[in-house]
Image (cartoon, one colour):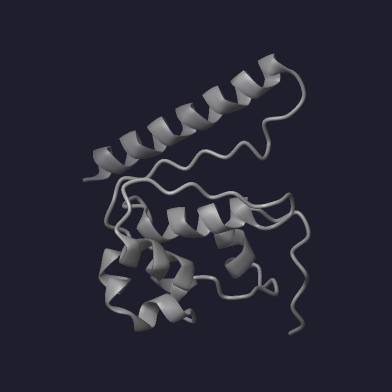
Amino acid sequence: MRKAIPLGVVDYETLKNQNYFFIDKSMMIYDFLMRKSTVTLITRPRRFGKTINMSMMSSFFDITKDSKEIFKDTKIVETEYISEMNQYPTIFISFANAKNDKWNVVKEIKLQLRKEYVDMLMYLNKK
């Protein structure tokens, strides 16, 4: 089956589950964990993959997910840090869809915060 180029795809799980062409950047997770930094600032030019990389990290760490399947063919699974997968409460907020005027930006951020809150409540209620 031929893989498509993921133009406009910003979600790592979609990228992997819908058989898009991708370059394995999972060792970025390894690099972050090796540094043991308290805070990391990620700056890159437009269209460089910031959102998809952050989505990948969220999928890897998020305690509410089971990401074994989407990471099975990546380099991170060959490291000692595989034990960190899906072990942490994770909040992923992107400004990629927060566009136009200030009110739409604020509205989009509120929607994302509400979604993260509901997702965590659903996870806690399952336990």
